[in-house]
Length: 128
Image 1 (tube, one colour):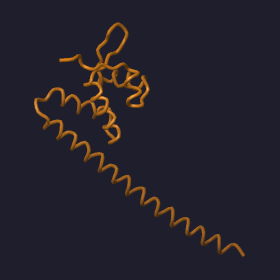
Image 2 (image 1 turned 135 degrees about the horizontal axis):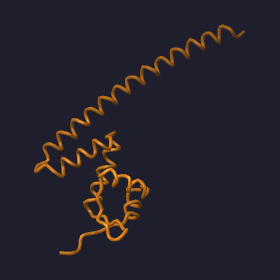
Image 3 (image 1 turned 90 degrees about the vertical axis):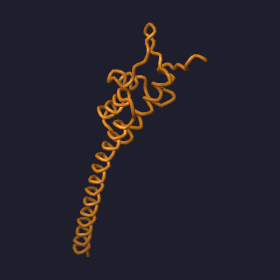
Image 4 (image 1 turned 180 degrees about the vertical axis):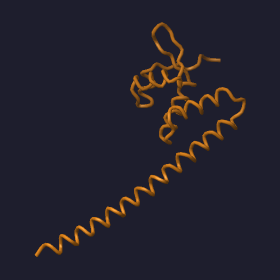
């Protein structure tokens, strides 16, 4: 069996189009745990997967705390059921919030159009 693949912080930075500072931040938040050799961080495939999950969670609107909870459930539970239930619950919460924001935006746009039309009408009435 061959040696497992390893990656430097610059490898991850290039692969995910992130700054090294961002990766170090995720490490400081306990989301990544590279092996240390002297002052060098060495990442493995597991870290690549975790970083991919962090970025996916962020795209879905998850907070870092929610991402961390998801990963902790994955690390500590013998099966995936608790993790999957938590992810589903978190997605539903964020989806509901986005739907509310969408409704609020549509209401605001409609109100803007109504005001703009009244202003146009008044402007047309005042111009010869």
